[in-house]
Image (tube, rainbow, N blue to C red; front, side, top):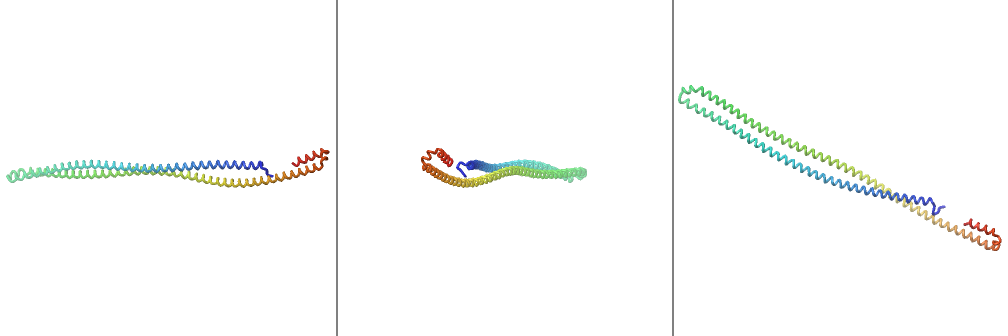
Length: 296
């Protein structure tokens, strides 16, 4: 029969209390982990925000660098164009000087021919004597004129070739500068994009891990809440059963006491009825006392 101070019940209650303490401690741990997870999530959000700001600043910096490169390119292009204009003017002056020399040679040839014609009209002998000299002079002048024309043609061809070469060099330098600028900008942008992708992947992985841990913690917390509610329900049922047992035991104790009192009264009444016989027989009294002690 159950008693109030039964060791098994007290052990069960103590085990329930210990389990409740463990559950509370685990709940506290889960709350701490949940708080840590929220802090990690906030930290990751701040980090993502900082990375976004860094990306914006890096984009601005890249745009500024590109603008500086364009300004540098335009400045050097202007300097190169000025140098080319100076060289072109110098070549043009040289060509003008050469053409002036050619014109001077042409004027000298015409003067020689005009000098030869009056000599032919004045004297036929002089004409005959100087015919060979005039022929030689005219031939020499023609050779000089041909040489001068050839020099003029060669100088013009040289000037044209120089101009074409300068234009080709200018175009080549512009193309090289443009390709170099595009390659540098592309390399810088590619490097920055790779760095941002690595940072974004790292942040995404950390956030996914934190979210998974947070989901696990929430699941454990929910299971513990369900377990605590079930154990609390079981504890209420056990308390009701214990109360019922206590009430039953109290009733049984009252019945026992009532039976004991009835039994004692009956024995006491029998002893009073015998009176002097009880006094005369002490051994019977001792026997009755023993019976009463055994009954109690």
